[in-house]
Amino acid sequence: MKPGLKIGDAGELTWVVDPTMTITLGGVPQATVFSTPSMIMLMERAAREALRPFLEDGEESVGVDVQVEHTGPASLGSTVRGVAKVIEMDGRRVGFEVRAYAGDRELGRGSHRRAMVHLDRLVANVMQTLKEEDRVMNLKRATGDLGKLETMTVEVANRIATVILNRPRAANAINLQMTAELERLVAWLAGHPQEVRVMVLSGADDAFCGGVDLKDVAGLSLEAARTLSWRQANICLALERLPQPVIAAVNGPAFGGGCTLAYSCDLRMASHAAQFAMPEIKRGWTPGFGLAQLTALVGKARALELCLTGESVTAARALEWGLVNELVPGTMLMNAARQLAERMLLLPAEAIRQTKRVIHLNDGNLPKVTYYADTEAYIRCLALPDAREGIAAFADKRPARFDGK
Image 1 (spheres, rainbow, N blue to C red):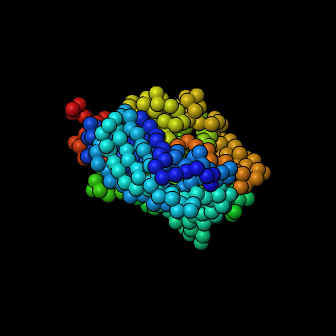
Image 2 (cartoon, rainbow, N blue to C red):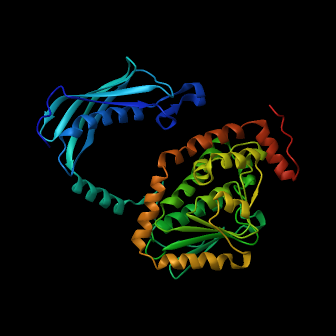
Image 3 (tube, helix red, strand yellow):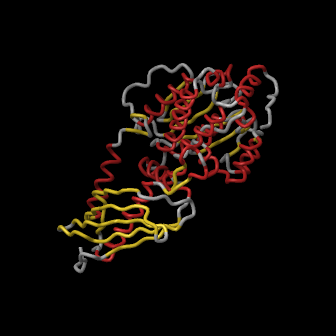
């Protein structure tokens, strides 16, 4: 640490409150406010700015303690300011008084301590932590045998796992049992990065996946439906965090949750028979998860078109939109997917893993965890009469008759 830092020195940082910094209270849009974690980050970053001029090459400061009281609100779009004043110096540790303001109005106050660390040691510790991480999202890595699965088949050959969703009478729809088995599969893949280097995912017969099984949803309480949606969202997010590249071979309709499952894979190959749709709006509710991934792939305008109309798009249109990487004749689809997987086997394994990890991190982790907001919107709609009508219409194989309110 360079000399010169003294008691009373201060750092300051100004932000404009954007949606990633907020929390919506009670589901009321007018009650969208600057969140406490974001305010703490503003204060910590202000303290970091105070220390920045005194850092040696290869040195950084890290937070070791924070005690903060949130004393006032700030709304979306507000200009907020963090101020950190040095009040204590103890070797390589520095204590701050921290405050946050919107204009002259105080938002919060407290104390914060930061320690000076050497970056090489910090990086070594982080890399060791990554090696020791035993979870993919909320799923614990499984190092034992996968065991028998009933809703899908899994074959491993030449370090490629070929997974076929296998509920053909239900268009391979994701029911409660398939949800549990997908969780087992993801945990097992996470625990076998050497034995399995690439995964190929497809569907039995003429469908990829028809989405979440509405027969299951119809029988669930709202709380059980919320929990199921969170579990399914976690599966899709966990696919991004697997050490293996995941290739979707989309052989037919990929609707709703099935479409989300496909675009949560790293790469998508599709036959000419493939179709993609987010038809939840036609059933009376919103997609329960996956909107951030969809928007990242096709952009806001296309995501809105898919989700607000509920209409399906052809494989050719999906290729044009960027929802699909490659279009392949149906008889060649699985061979093409396996050939792509085999080409990946010729590349350095750790470089593949790290490239996948960093690209998905760079895509933005925070927006993707808004599946909690996706789910709450879905549950809110599921509680309304329109959703009951949508489920009944689906069961009766007739158009839904919504009340239009």
